[in-house]
Length: 286
Ligand SMILES: NC(=O)c1ccc[n+]([C@@H]2O[C@H](COP(=O)([O-])OP(=O)(O)OC[C@H]3O[C@@H](n4cnc5c(N)ncnc54)[C@H](OP(=O)(O)O)[C@@H]3O)[C@@H](O)[C@H]2O)c1
Image (cartoon, rainbow, N blue to C red; front, side, top):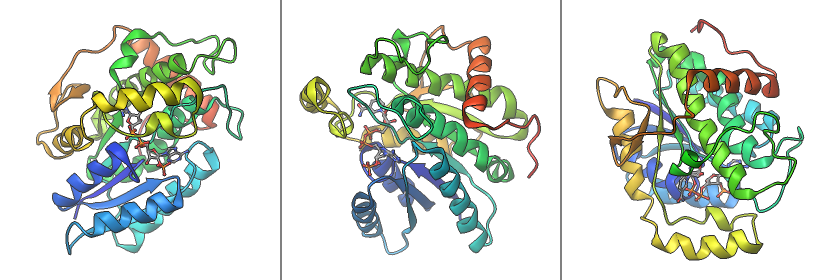
């Protein structure tokens, strides 16, 4: 049985993608933050079929020690099932913040969850992904197109703007996927970014408030249901041979920002390694 790890599986796009992959026979390891959301999501996903094979892990992926704990629990879960392969890792958990807020490490929260959590979790799961010649899929956004990395102040400590922080974190998603492909295509690991389009979820209303909450509660009504982008994750997980482009919308490749360069991808890799205290290997030991 194939396994997919999906972060942010307790609601919205991650929940719909979990349902889509369950129907395709995957064992799902879902990750969410809020315990009640996780329990409710697990109950609903189990009701989809008698064969649903799902485990939820709950934790705050903004905090690096939590990412480490969850990565350890994933490895343990796989070992208990006598499996060491991970076919799909979907780094989808994300947040919006109205104000400058930081994690335990002192990192800006949107950058920490939307980018660094994926960077660290993927690093920890690389050996499992290599064994399966697996795929890493990140949830990006078209909003990345109107942004450059603020290399001199990546946490935006000066003049914080929530939308700028969000757009930068989504540019980081594509730079990270490009960096992964440059390093690990030879190991059989392929990385992608999905642009889900505008989707009707509550992302802008969780832990926000003020203008962000007000705008999002109106804007989300124009979005598609999460089941629409879920098909693109299934397409990228299932299609053989592995699709070769980097950025997808509605199961089709799409163009992305000219900021997505080898130099920027490398620079982000180096910075993220420093911020996570890790060093990606040049060769993955499986
Ligand atoms: N909605 C859109 O129009 C849109 C457009 C482009 C990109 N995206 C991206 O899509 C992804 C999913 O968002 P969504 O729209 O589906 O919103 P959502 O329904 O709020 O889903 C976000 C998921 O991330 C989880 N999460 C939030 N904070 C977390 C934390 N600290 N640790 C662990 N998990 C955490 C949430 O868990 P809890 O619910 O338990 O807190 C939830 O499962 C995000 O990366 C977002 O940037 C969304």
